[in-house]
Image 1 (cartoon, rainbow, N blue to C red):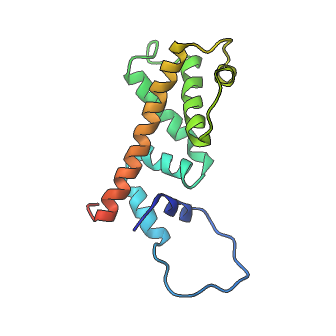
Image 2: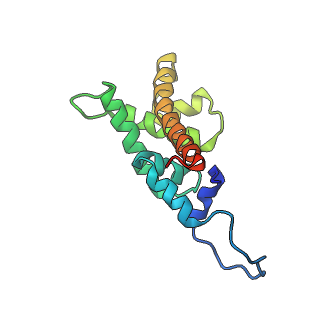
Amino acid sequence: MITLESFKLLNPKVARLERGSGGTPEITFQEVSDCLAAMNLPAAAWARLKYAQQGMFSANVLAYVAERLIQDGESEDGVLTQYWLSMAQLAVVFDLSQNQLTNRRKAKAIGIKWWTKNNEKHLSKCLFFVDQLDYEVRASISAWNRGDL
C-alpha cells in the first residue's frame, strides 16, 4: 500500500553502518515510480516537490499554476504580470511551509505595500490550483492502492 510518505523512497539513500533486518521491503522504489508514472506531469511534480522534498520540481509546479491562471483569464495577451507570478510562487511556498503568514509578510513577499482583501482573493485562487494538484496526487494513490491503475 502506497502512502504519501512512500515518496521519500525517491530520494537516494546513504549507506547505513547498521545491519538491516533483511527480507523484502513492503513497498519498493519501482512501485512508487510506477504510481508517479500513472499521474499527470504536474501532479507528479507536486508529489516530488512536497512529499519527496525534491526542490528541482518547483519550476514545473509554478508553470502549471501560471498556465491555469492564463486559462482563467488573468493574463495580458497570454503573459502573466510579475504580480501574478509572485502570487503563484507565494502560494506554492505557503503550501509547502504549512505556516500561517501574516498580512505584512505576504505583502513583503510579493513586493507590495499593503495586503488587501483583493490580494487575499488572488492568493486563494492560486492556492486552489495547488490544492487541485494535491487532490490529484491523493486520488492517484488511492486508485493505485485499489488496483485501478
